[in-house]
Length: 396
Ligand SMILES: [Zn+2]
Image (tube, rainbow, N blue to C red; front, side, top):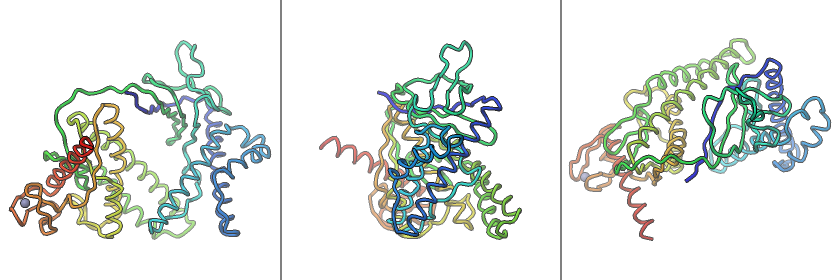
């Protein structure tokens, strides 16, 4: 079996190349903003919806009019940037259709646009562009040249897409590869259901709690504070700019910590279980936003802040993405089930009532008096639903 995976390597550009990379990012950012402006005015003034195809067709003229600017870069990477805007609009309209009130896609300021993608290796970019070099690996980028790569791991499979990313003062190249041979793990004979929460990122049906790292909760808390603080700053003031920069830095930190925690949790699950059953997040999110209620948050998290909670919650999507990717390459099975009633049904007798849930953490069945941690009880129900789903699929 083959899977898709990505590799990220540090780039070692010369100072001239670093300047070219900066110009490349900035031109792509301006292209993104110009395309966004185009869509906005067309919609406001004429009620016309501009599509990706229209904007992609304009690229030819944009390049012809700007031979020393936009024309320096790869046509395909510019198309990828326009597609990225298209995705932002698609997501916006999806949220509108779901009856939510999303923010309109935003202009990207300096420092808010840090990635350029080349959708195909060999088209405006070339991985391992100097294969006969005795000591170093290079990547060729149109408009920048052959940039040295600190390749600390071997790349296997076929390079499909290539991105350049700026993180602070450092530059990275990210390769996404197809046809990577999967490394299956030996079967353990164990299966688990997992319940996703706030205090514990996941709780397994056999009673293991994978706690959200405390430092993540602390950063989330600081981020929530910083955002409240920002609301009090005057528009266009220096203090406001400082506050915005602080928020951006905290967001980046939350992302790193969340990613790190998600990797560790997913790795542990994939090592221990052949089958892992989780709640289908699309359904979970829908029911949560429809009911409009926020459950009482977990014990470790201050109740004061819905924002804080939502920052921690947002980790589930990241976690599930990582889990499914790790599971796939280890030959494990991941099953998603409808989460309806998993938290109110008794895992021993099946009696379903909201009175069963005594507190956020405590479950006590009003019919059979079964007592358990509420998240473990839910995880067992989730596991059972997943195994039933598999059985039904095999019988069909
Ligand atoms: Zn019961």
